[in-house]
Length: 65
Image 1 (cartoon, rainbow, N blue to C red):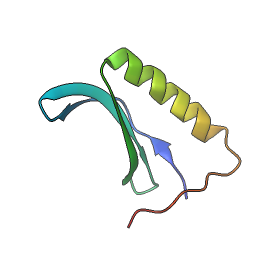
Image 2: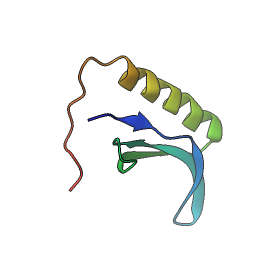
Image 3: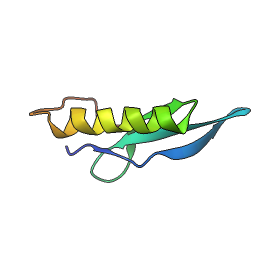
Image 4: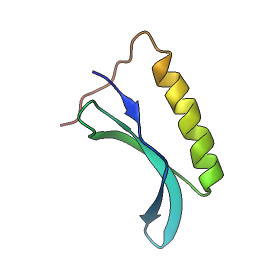
């Protein structure tokens, strides 16, 4: 399974708006979503997530239902 990190985007949740990104499978289906209060926080987290995934020799996770 190939995991990817999406671009950061503005996300509405409830009455609030934040910024976030998804970790997706090779088909683009979200496996996990992360939302932060600021765009700066979301970008920093997505950079770390990319590094985490790109440098991994193996990633094990439950496939979506």
